[in-house]
Length: 355
Image 1 (cartoon, rainbow, N blue to C red):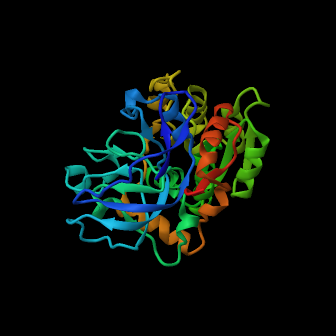
Image 2 (tube, rainbow, N blue to C red; image 1 turned 135 degrees about the vertical axis):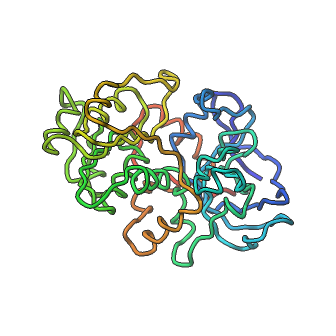
């Protein structure tokens, strides 16, 4: 089958013929219907995140935002059937550890990142394997088209968990999102749907225009002001209730924290680059004096996917509003290369794997 293969970090990616996966007894194999192309794939290609355990040994198949149709089922699988269309979270869980048993399977003790770790070759491929399928393969409701749902497996569902659970955003909350790439725009859309008054911050007017289309009540171009955090505090009459850094560089993390009012909550969604290597300096005394909370947010529990899918089915959320274009598998390497300049808008989705 065809797949996008990482042969060497930072060297051009290639489409190659690789062996089709076979299901483990507890796993299934799915034909990939669509797979979002995400900045996280770019980070993996660059060789970032060894400090996070997300640095596979090449050669390795990339891709972590798929939807699929089950084509083969392992002998021990009980809840997933051949022919079912499924959402596939990138945060594979074991289903048996204490965290999984207590509803925190997104940070499973035995976490495996699809497309990021040797144990889970990715989904820029005609087929992908899903281990522990009874927990990690999420059946899609009949009212949600699998092609339209592609791209929900990371940016959209990560933003949902960040806004709906980790914030959590409530009606009337002032929310600021720093960084309006795919995950940031998803957070804008979701926070708006949850009743928040969203301020979007970025360097590109095109991204800020898209944020307004997705519900932002105000925007700040950080390139055009001396202090983006001060601008947000002015807009929100003292500071946001909830802030999020959706990019993961030092300046956006600091600006997001500094955008908060007393008693506010910061949600860190973006992971850092090799420049920060996981370490960012923060105004710790402000955390004390202002009783600010700092929360991390990783993925979304498969057991809570129904909350997001219900909002999609009812029309309150529309993941297709974030899709900028659809491409074929041979265009994926160039799409990832374009992310080096930080000038892509929205979510590209690969939906043709056999061309």
